[in-house]
Amino acid sequence: MDKKVVIIPTYNEKENIEAIIRSVFALEGEYHVLVIDDGSPDGTAGIVKAMQDEFTERLHIIERSGKLGLGTAYLTGFKWALDKGYDYVFEMDADFSHNPEDLPRLYEACSLGGGDLAIGSRYCNGVSVVNWPIGRIVMSYFASVYVRGVLGMKVYDTTAGFKCYSRKVLEAIDLDAVEMKGYGFQIEMKYTAYRLGFQIREVPIIFINRRLGTSKMSGGIFGEAFWGVIKLRFRKLHRRTA
Image 1 (spheres, rainbow, N blue to C red):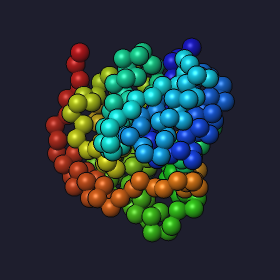
Image 2 (tube, rainbow, N blue to C red):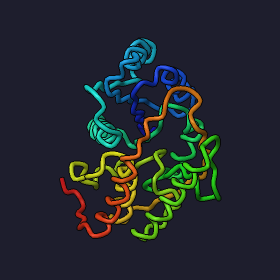
Image 3 (cartoon, one colour):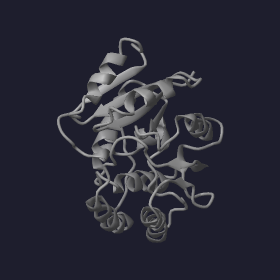
């Protein structure tokens, strides 16, 4: 059986973290979870560590001191997952905006559908977003349009954060060379995989805005993405070698 791990970055997610972990573990297929907590003052990490007594072999946590950024959290998780021998590595939010029941669909898009990277896409079948303000929907949608136009990448949801990587993609990407650490991180990872010739599959999902807790999005990360995409267009890319 393939080894699968779901990486969930957290900062102040005490309202959601236990429920999201239990939802993943309720799925068939033996998914593991790695929580990367950036020093949440609300006790998120303590909740996870208490659950480790119940899920000894399947639940893992890395605690970091302070908010170090979404991109660095995932890069830390990717390196950990590769070191532990996982075959498929997932990105997922803690707040149920990504439905854990879609994880098997992402996995199958890779394991059975020929994909090397599967994306839970909000925009490949129109716009599938629930409870977002219209302004945020417009900004997100046209951000993807902008990225496609600049980079020529045939992906509808270029900023999506719900993904499944096959191991060989993460092994090929030079993770230490990833530059964008905020919103643009998701774009850079997809574009790097695309440029390296990997097969990308988009799986339609319904994205539901969080019901509990507070969003961690900020205006500055959009600026990083805007200028970072232009830099990506002209950057030379090299496949990582062992």
